[in-house]
Amino acid sequence: MGKRIVFSLLVDNEAGVLSRIAGLFSRRSYNIESLTVGETENPAISRMTVVAEGDEDVLEQIQKQVDKLIDVKFIKVLPPESSVCRELILMKIAVTSESRQQLIAIVDIFRAKIVDVSPESVIVELTGTQSKIDAFTNLLGDFKVLELARTGITGLTRGWSDESRD
Image (cartoon, rainbow, N blue to C red; front, side, top):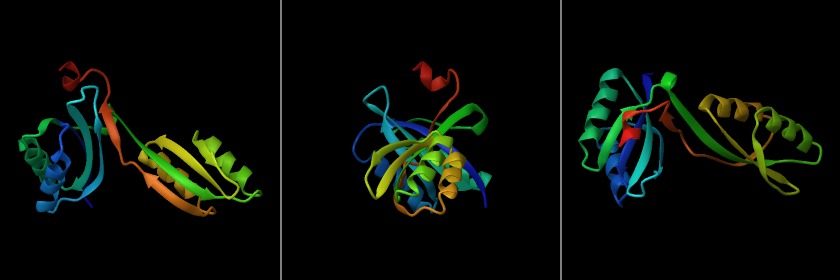
């Protein structure tokens, strides 16, 4: 198992950019563990957060290859000690009248939110680090998860960074 790294990219907000970047990974047999993308404060630019794993040389090569793409305006690594990274999970969980209170207690402990309720299920939303979300899902082992959606990691560096000044 290699080192895990989080790349933050500022890219043109245009059709085909995601495909070109994903294609670069695919052509070189690099695996994308997580990928999120969305518009920034500038509608012409999107922020793409890519999580990859590999040895030092592979990760350095990924960074160099991505940086060469014309659509990429800025790329940097988000070090865990100087970045804030979060993920969102939505889970639809089967409940009975007996199990509902137990689920609510777990939701409260993790500061998650119940965003939808029906007689047979509850949809829970939780935002946090990957380890917090993993701990939450592991604690729900006795519940039947009907559906689950995770966004993948997105993040920013702490404080004032070079990209913030542009």
